[in-house]
Length: 57
Image (tube, rainbow, N blue to C red; front, side, top):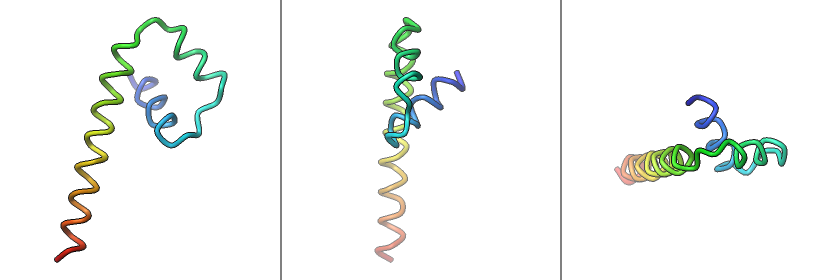
């Protein structure tokens, strides 16, 4: 599961290598990447909202 999280974070930042991307697509478990991507994106948005509310105080 840690490799999925690392791949999603690297893809989110845009620093994932082509070789790793090919490896991810050939693993045959897209649901794990989709779910992890959704969760990471949701956490990112919540963190931005939290930081914005702190800055507005």
